[in-house]
Amino acid sequence: MDDNEDMTGTARTEDRPGRALAGRIALVAGATRGAGRALAVELGRAGATVYVTGRTTRERVSEVGRASETIEETGELVTAAGGVGVAVPTDHLEEGQVRELFGRIEAEQGRLDILVNDLWGGERLTVESIFGKRSWETPLADGLRMLDLGVRSHVITAALGLPLLVRSDGPLLVEVTDGTAVTNRRYRENLFYDLAKNAPIRMAFGLGEELAGYGGAAVCVTPGFLRSEQMLAHFGVAEENWRDVIAVEPTFAVAESPQYLARGVAALAADPERAARWNRKSTSSAELARVYGVTDVDGSRPDAWAYFDAVAERGEAVSVEDYR
Image (tube, rainbow, N blue to C red):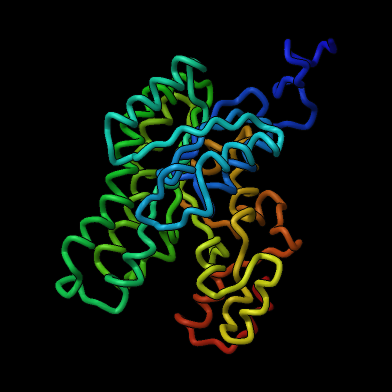
């Protein structure tokens, strides 16, 4: 048996060369699909052991209604990328389940180094109940459900996970949302959605203050125009032919894959200066790409927020391709 193998003959993650996060323990809450899945896989590719949670399993489908992506599959993809993926089906609105999750991580690892809060699942509500409606026109149950999915789940997870996270020698909390503190100065079309997407920004701001005393950092990140599985299905295309959509929706030219944000976050997590550089801030996939030199899967660096700002806010006549 090689010195870099365990008793099963498998190379130990922490001994593999070029793994910036080797030996680190991460949790990606909300990793069934989209940005969450990509974040988990990229952290694993960098060498981390990644616990992944979600509500859709091979036996049960969540309210999102997509049986094609499961949390077990995400765990397998993390392992296939070179990390150690551990799938733990969890509803983060159920306090007991979240306590069990962190109890398991504590028992198996003794600490947590990286907590990624990517909980959401409200896409159906944004389409059916939110956009184009004033707050008093929005079904109250739908609006409150959106706050549960986008705010309450984040608060429960942070409150129960931080006691374990601060055992790390460099704790990192990553909140994931839609928009930054700058872009979200504009009203996000509906009160419930606006609250749901601004809360993680404020959580990173406040929790960064608390984590600073432990040498840690909290940062909020956002993708741009995300080419998620759900978005591709909406347009009836796959990742291989996503550019076909541009003929009917020109702005889709600035869309980005989930891996784009994930590569930037993995680089941030491996940055020894991350606390000084990012604590309490919000940032985007495009800014992370510029800072760390990463690209999307096609080698481009899309900046959807800058594009929409130029077009929607300043009314400029620009080419979408100039923002790739």
